Amino acid sequence: MGFLKRLFGGGPQEYVDKTGLYFYFKCANCGTVVKVRADKQHDLNNAAGGYVWHKTVVDSRCFRRMQVVLNLDRNYNVTNSEISGGQLVSEADYGNGDG
Image 1 (cartoon, rainbow, N blue to C red):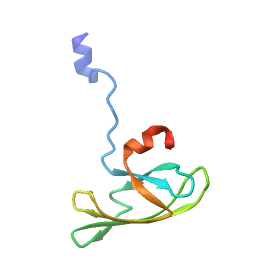
Image 2: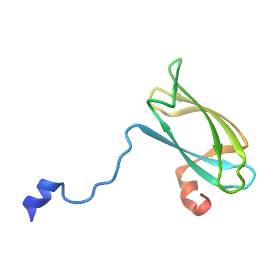
Image 3: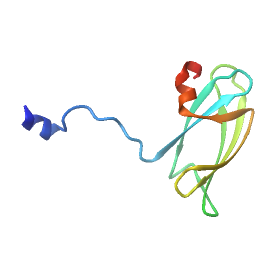
Image 4: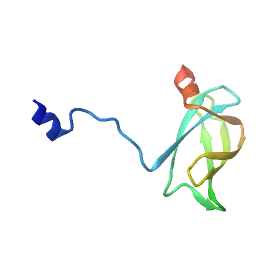
């Protein structure tokens, strides 16, 4: 049995998305929290010392638009956010049943 575990990796492994960044936005109108993925290679624009991401986010409840501009450093940490129609929230807010 130990041989098979070593051979096949010991069971299911959690998927790790190496090219994606995940952000969570809460709609100012209905309070729905939306999870959005940004691809590091295709969605981010180079900026001085980091990246800029422009996105229009629409939630699934009231379908209002949230205009998002995020500035990120070279390590993909958010340094500044400009969001109309919503706000940037944590992953924990998404998991609280709001999303």
